[in-house]
Length: 307
Image (tube, rainbow, N blue to C red; front, side):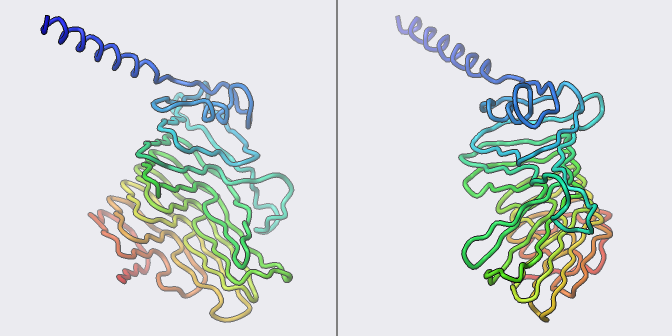
């Protein structure tokens, strides 16, 4: 009798595990529409933990609003026949770096990780994002036109073999603005906590800040990160441009990469990033970071700051 009960329990556990595994599925994106049936947005909304989102073709998807993902453990893989799916925020630099260009533009992806949920983005081109300014009482904010990652509540985000390029953050102070401080950070990527990047290219992203009375904190044209890891990545050609009528009213932090708290850069190349003001680190800032195995890294004017 005891053996029979044990066998019954074992069979139940096997069937239970098989049932759990069967729940994970592949979801195929069948068109390049911003929303609706067969779109990436619908696939994200209907996905469940363990699902993988794939694509019928290497689409270019023009977004009208940001893609939002929270509280799910999924994989999005954009590789189709050797080509990457392109996610496009529709920003064009036709009007000399202003946000008055014709058309609609948006951040590309906002990821909110919680409860040890693992999210993986693979083989995507994340481009032409432009984040609108958000005003809260005495301050204004604009973070992460390409990717905004928030793993503060226990999530885990992995970015693999992606290209993050030509995203822009613009702050142009309105003469009637009552804001005392503007925080403009991470045109390509902004991360509040976490994010593992491997085999990624982060290039030609740009922050532009104009002001005459607001204190502006502008950080990292390429990546503004907290507790991130970069492995075999290229961070190149990113810019932080700050223009101020009042001296010392703009505080800048890294043209290519700003890393706060703990993090690592491994076997990566960082070059050709620029900033047009004198700041605490004109190319890259590592604040309380562990820089591991800087293997063939090309850097200009590296500054290491330890608090």
